[in-house]
Image (cartoon, rainbow, N blue to C red):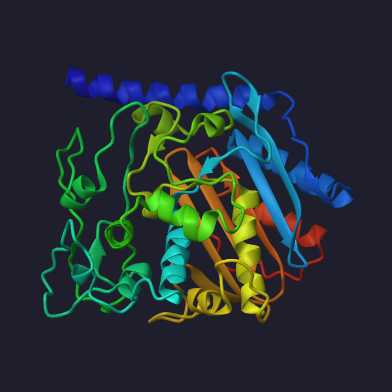
Length: 395
């Protein structure tokens, strides 16, 4: 009983501590970084709403990028990447992207498929060399197309990451199941429902994708993603490394939030499940990815994202609202694609038009997932977009 009381008190005090810590910093003047692109009355209006939202929702730092006319027209950082040391967010501050990692993983596979390097419709167990995907549906092979579109019937759904200062398990160890130090629960990656039986979101499925790429290409997933997508798109502040290099570590946003600060100590979690949740990046880098897709769809592709790759990425797969690792929708008659990511201490989202050359990316180092609406509304209004803000933001 005493131990239970101690745990409850620790969590309660952690919640108060974490909330007060961030709130105190946000009572001060919230810093704004130098902006990329325009600075006019539109960005002044957006900045005021961002800072008001940060105070109301207790979000230490936000970084944003806006695309209009098919170009990155504005990017800026607000608040603190390190609250304790009062280090501000700028446009080169890197955040954990959470499940937005899946978009880069899907594009990496599609680029390889486009050049004949890998078959989207082949049984993954015939490609895998160092591990095999267990399945209770042996008569129905699982393909990369199934895995990328969450139609493989795999679990688990998501991962909790590991302490930044500890040695993380290997990807094979993750695939074979690892134990929570409190509950001792094993969560191996396996097929638990027949493929194509319905949409079943699975970070575990993307771990299989990661292993397929590493076995097929004979290189680390980070290196493959850099060669095929990140470097050609000039995403120079992005990496899938578990431990970013010294240069990147100088400008990382620490993760905040009562749950992160109370139960998960440290500045951030690390994810050997890189394809599912391990991307470090900036809104400007993600905007470059979005712009490359938008241009490729129109036949103006440069670099690795051909028109075929972009169209396959955005083509409904099995169900009309799901593309190749991305959500699809419609906004006032214009097709859109969007996605979001959540890691402990970080929340990020993007939404973009397929053909109208518009889009936004917002990344934060807080755990509040319900702060996007007022910021998106003021962006839409400031840039004169006739936007249907009822389009889903919470997927």
